[in-house]
Image (cartoon, rainbow, N blue to C red):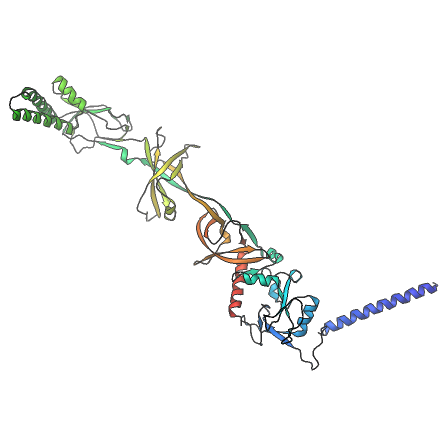
Length: 489
């Protein structure tokens, strides 16, 4: 191959350019490998130390060698290193911890904004550009924007860059103010309303003649005949009443007032004795109209209800201590519900309750709490509450079991997810998110917990953002920072 003069000249220029580039790269590599910096040491070979710092927390500076509070040896910061970093726009030395997920003390070097430069030995001196301090000749140190913002935040506030938040699994939620409703579900047993139970007795000894209500479970109306009774004492009282009535009629116009008043008093006493033995006004009226003593007297039901007990049989003797009938009015029933003792503070009189029964699917019964019993069951640790329920169709029967639901309305509260709260047992705190990746620890006072949400009584307001995941890592960093700040010289 034959080279032309033009090709020979071009090849020579290319070889020259490659040699210059290779020589420059080799010189730069050799300087870096040998540990030389662009700024040489001073004439006598000694490197000037500006300060010592903690490798785990480089922002902590010390004016003499020694050990950091965490036990690590302090490292020197040389003047030529600071000058080189300032000239190249880099940051001061940082610890390896800054590269760990969730353990950074600030944003990356490329995003850190420098507010001013200051003298590390005399921080009051500030400058708007890099250089050296006029008094001591020390190289000025940059003051970053996030450091200034952090100084205004409460103690324990930490800054974590976005990429480290992702690696640490940090998730946040917005604090909301909304209605808080709690549902208490329990079981209840239907029983008869004890205030609407009638026990039928007679007040005089006698013998049962006829029985009109002759089986348990029969529905009777108020005033309906139950049985008839023959009693010699009742017959004697009726006769005495008729005699007293005739005497009163004969002596009412007597000229002597004492005689007239005596007959009147005797008549009223005889009438009152019949009424005390549960002889009705209608029966006394019939006695007045006929003037004849009735051998058998009829007794009537005092209320409308179902016969739940019966001890009346024909041709049997009875005494005043014999309970002849028990009649229960089931138009209203009670439901005794068991409430766990820790739920009792949320229950109050007059509170609405809904009941449902498995054998009446889709049907709901409404009632109100009428009474809270004063004792706790030692075995189940529950308190009974009594619920009044209307039962016009008699669907609810005593000894039935039902599912009861009580709704507790706390009103409008500030709510956060329960996992956002760090509970040490003596105090509770959350981490509030601020712009710039700052996380502020804040103590809160908690209210009730409902369905994974907890009411915050003090410490937060609606619209703020809190950490709900990754807060344990943030809490560890916050406590470490507090410990280091407390032991800083």
